[in-house]
Image (cartoon, rainbow, N blue to C red; front, side, top):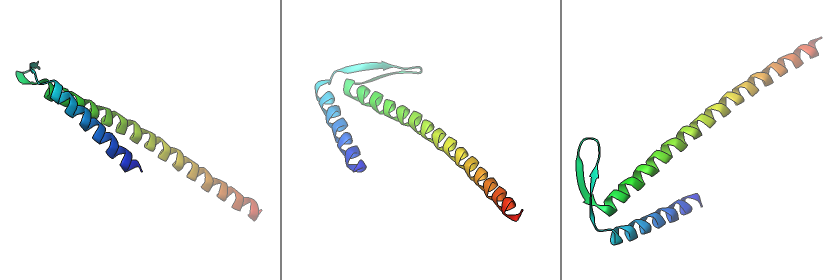
Length: 95
């Protein structure tokens, strides 16, 4: 189900990109730090779109891994406390 939704979203983005490229055929000059590049407006929009998607994905993965690490630390602590409880129960049984 999740793959189907991702595929549908990919097709929607591709369709929007095709629409933008068909309407924006003018050439622009893209000035960046080291040079100037002439390119169609649609290409510049596509580059900005993909760079934005990549940056957002990197931020999301960083947040996801941080949460997973915190969860793992909490699980380690819970397991340690459970082992301690079991040892205390065994000590109470022996008395």
